[in-house]
Length: 229
Picture 1: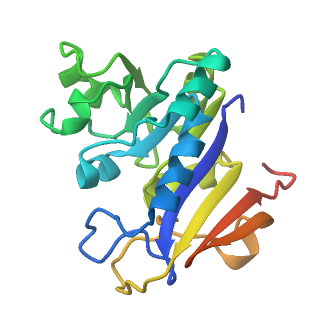
Picture 2 (picture 1 turned 120 degrees about the horizontal axis):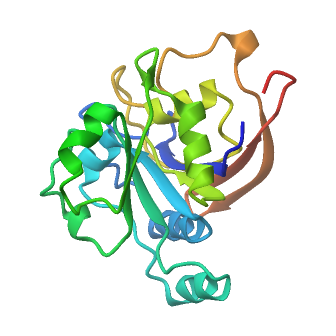
């Protein structure tokens, strides 16, 4: 599969939840975690996130640090990476503050989901794929993103999106920030949702680095590749 290099960047509670049971916006990360997220975004050509993540926050994180903006300029990149919303239905509220942020916006959806947006200026580009087992066809989607010139993508949630990409071996790295709180709740989302993986088929990780900053731990993993990936 021809595709961009992908890095998941998520903050989670010490018990592995990325939001509480009400799926409220997860704002429990420290300023150090926000800086870390912005640094990873600044390295990317695009940021990919699900419709649920957009509905929860209403906005996206822009690169604002002057040093990071300068680094992007030195590497010949636009000031902001492309913000790519993925949605099977395309049912998004055009009143979200996201649509007023000064960032390039793309929509990844189906032909049905794209229809309401073609006459709108909300998205600079609309990419369409078919559904495969009720999910977007992520093999085709990754090829489209690659053909569009995106070489590095940050995956910013949610758990269903991460699970879908893992299922087609389309994730390379993960940055997980472990934050000092316990959220609990059987319905609270985790970094990987979906149906889950049997233990013998579960993706395996290689720890590249770990760092404790104040009360948070920053973990950097690489997905171990197997012969079928």
